[in-house]
Length: 248
Image 1 (tube, rainbow, N blue to C red):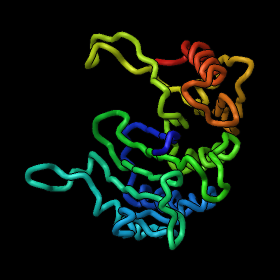
Image 2: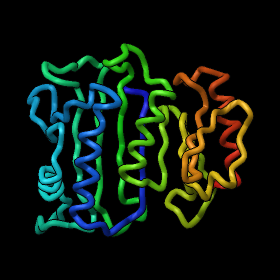
Image 3: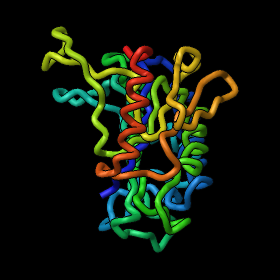
């Protein structure tokens, strides 16, 4: 199963339904520009039923958001404050590529405007091997996709992370379990919004791409690495220590 994830989060908003549909339409339609695997959103290899057509029109995106709106348990009435879920597994164009190494999926929870504060998210499990290149994602290839996702969704937090990365936590008796996860969470590639990027200090061996509005993408290294990679882990821990003063 895939080791690499791209996650975006943003706080509760109250956008119009049309704006959410426009964003979803642009996102689904634009993803294939970054990898051919995103030319399909499927329910499963068995059914091969589409959960979203590609390209996705704004009218179709509106329909998906309405049909997939969260509902109360009893009675099962729409619960618009919790937003809508749109999900799909990706296997490229027909006849589809269902190899395990090519597996990828995306879960969108969008349109939430109630609690919790981080109620909206895009969670992408990226394929271990890109069908379009025959090798794993590289950081220089993934950053353009991250910039596209940021432009569409305007997240407060975004990172490309490897599954063995543990989020940093601190003791906090007001939270369940007595500890709280620090934000922004740090990954293989970490997005810092303009206010945090302006305060950040970085280790010498990370790559920092400054964006036009003052935000930054901070990359540990070009290739993804495993949990036994001492050099990669050393870079991660150095970045965690350097960014700790701007986390909350």
